[in-house]
Length: 438
Image (spheres, one colour):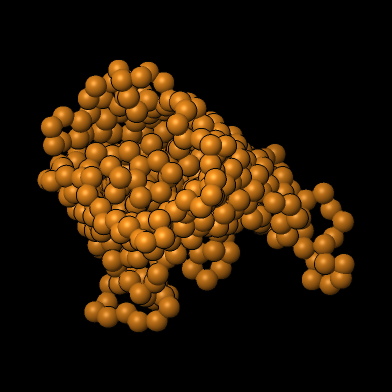
């Protein structure tokens, strides 16, 4: 428990999976202690993506438009090596945490891969933060998992699996030569039930952890959206959690979180910031987890404006900045929402679970007018159902098998000149993996 809690300290501040209590802890002469922990995992993932034309009404498969992805990489949780140091000086407890998250894949299906784009050579410094705490709570400063929607991802069963590998409609995993490859982590339900919280620079205050309830409030570096490339205000995020049920419902909790960010247009010539109101990115999320004996149930969701359907604003993908649905054709904020419904049973060494959910994008009236005028089409929604079977071989080693069926739709101008679904992609995926926690 302690060991996995350290591995997930960056994913969490809340590791909660039954594993071995062994870990390497060194006690130093100055009263400080240092702990090492981590995990190594690898998943074979095979994905079959098919495209369908729906412009005429009934969706028909498009010949030659399919994509097959076959490779080995990490699941949603990357491999981790974490270093934790703690000490008490006067009235405060101090801590330092560094988390390396390397990949196991080459990055493409070749015999050898070198250079900065070789995924196996990358060192993803996901966590670099310090803490200062006391009876009053804790202040965290540095790079760590965000606060908004973090419980949505931490209660997702695909955190210890894979979930979808590609975004539908298919957003890539494309080499310059056109071949497809799995690299980095799988998606879990990122884009299929919640937005990705990510690891970002922050100052976050959290209330003491010995209560049934907890409050975290953080100030984060700004996030830009589309043409709003100047973050003029720090981003604010907050989370409230409440544990309930005592021993009969151990592990049950309620959680709610929110976020606010702001960015403006950026001019290349002085004055650097143009006189414009900018764009506000806002969001609220929450959910509940109920654990009863061998069963656990999760229901979570979110609603956001100006964030898109995958991340919480812009993302840097494949050498360029991507705006995944946050703004419309006239740079107005689009709203998006999503949910995840999940059930899981654990008995002996086995655990079996399933989840269903998706992310949806609300097109604005300007989007609809542009589509009706024949100006392209827009993403509409994506959903996925995931079934997972886990075997805890030992306290530290688990074997995971998953099946995922995902679906994504595009809204456009149909053949009868009406607005509706014009294209759909489906993906069937099998994932088999092993996870070792040390």
